[in-house]
Image (cartoon, rainbow, N blue to C red; front, side, top):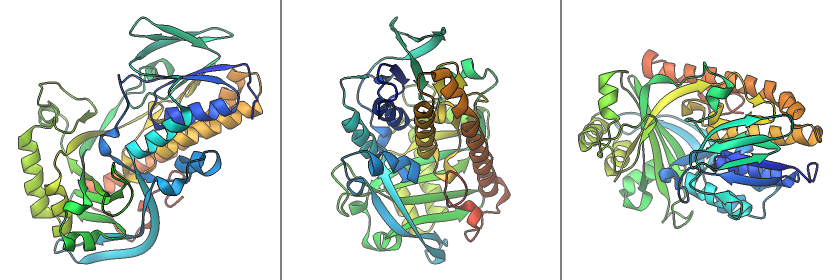
Length: 396
């Protein structure tokens, strides 16, 4: 594919969505440079990802790397009662990876020659032929196409939609991973071959196995979880988001930086609320961390020859396990539009935008509804198919 053999592109944000975009644009013939704000390789804090078709499509269709070398899998979804018995269990195959495993695989395909660390993009301008990005370092770079894939705190989003602001959900996600080998035999047996939920009043937790840093096999796997807990907006949340250094996090508090008193309370609550196997995983987590769960959606994703994708365009709470899939879908559909509109980048972006805005809207509405059912209405029913993962709808 070489529909744009003499064109250049800049991708702002070198995470999974940004790298997928960069790879697809390069396949179209673009000369692509990626600019990542962090000063060194990303690590993702060990978090897990539920894999969906759009997320893995690069490895299925284009990469020489084997998808089977990047993921774990389970065959069932199960819900546990407080005493550890099974409240509900049904066949459902899902595959998972760790953020770091997937990122490193994409970066290996893209390479590091055109991947630039430590460059924070703070603004852009454009004319009829080029777009120019400004960086806080004083650097400027221009290209025929610019794609902002710089995440939930995107510096560009306000230029697309000045009204798009983060809206706090009313709850946070406690996240963590534990080496499977550290758990008791009984807990490993309970969690084996399943994604596990434990639903309690105004809260729920889900956990599943992901690859460890050393590999995919049982001996190196990690159990990854997210526990949704209500924290009202205001001083309580504000105090919780002050880390051990005295800095306030707006979207997360990193591993090792959450104040000990909150971790101690979280572990006590897990023991009181959850099934023994679930509680064991939470209590055994060496460095749990906090994610502030907020939603935001820009009503524009295309401005001339500049595009906004992934969490930069629409970030939502993770109940549908669709965040990385949405970023990948934005990238694939953008590449298709560019391939079908050779030489006219603004027209390609204008053609691409409406369907992705509609997808953002439908996903956001669905996950807000799911969260409300769990955290505030207590109507989360394990048998309800509307609560299944999926980017385009429950289970799809």
